[in-house]
Image (tube, rainbow, N blue to C red; front, side, top):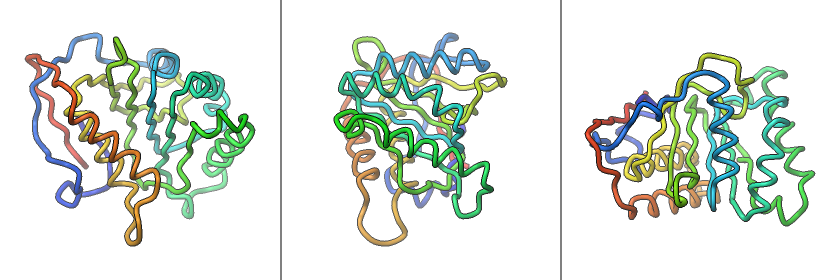
Length: 219
């Protein structure tokens, strides 16, 4: 599984890069726009407490499509974190419009709902496309890594992702996302702290046994 972070693995402080033996089945492959949209709908409708989405790009149309699902999830008490990678200062106007649309959509939410929906204040600079949530059976955690820009896709392209259910792998993914948010100097912000807490929680969960070998490759 390749994660396009833009951060060299040796300087990622939350990673213990290794391979994992776990379970991966045919149904864990997500292929095509319709399946990816179904995953977004599944995650936001089934998550019990946590949804973390990292997308390089953000588009107004996608934000409009998923905000009712985000609103419903937050109303159930789910905390939804939306992280984005686009380097804002270098982006063209069309690319910036999605960031503005997301901020405006969240600002319109009722205060009690808005407190559970967080759109990161600054970019990560990463092309990673990652989704982590406790939307699996009995509230188990699952993650998705692949080519789908979850916050920008029109869900009509031939994107491919893989579902990962092993908390050890998901903990490393949360660590990657935390690392991408760490500022060059100064204190960690709330995004980093939440992701670090998620990583710690995931590391305490039971591994998922299986025969598949999964390695995270950071590019």
